[in-house]
Image (cartoon, rainbow, N blue to C red; front, side, top):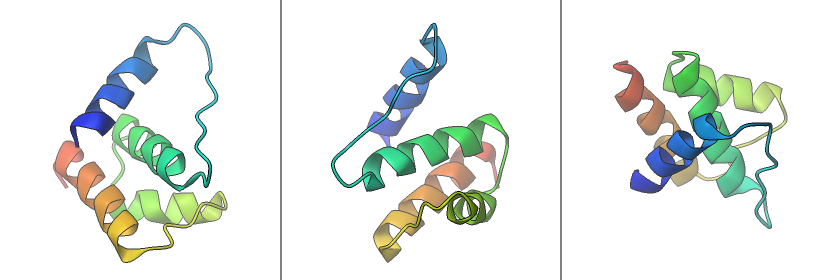
Length: 77
């Protein structure tokens, strides 16, 4: 969770938009979705639904659980 916290802190301090990329896109997509969910006060379930609408799939139960749990714990859901 510390890495996600660091990512989110740095993302809010950027002077402009940034491209976030990893080879498969799963980790970077998860980081971005967690950031968006926390910034917008979404629940973990809402983040998962929004990610799927945008074409991003948490294709493993562990990734989905981490994204959902992180957002819920940071938004008091």
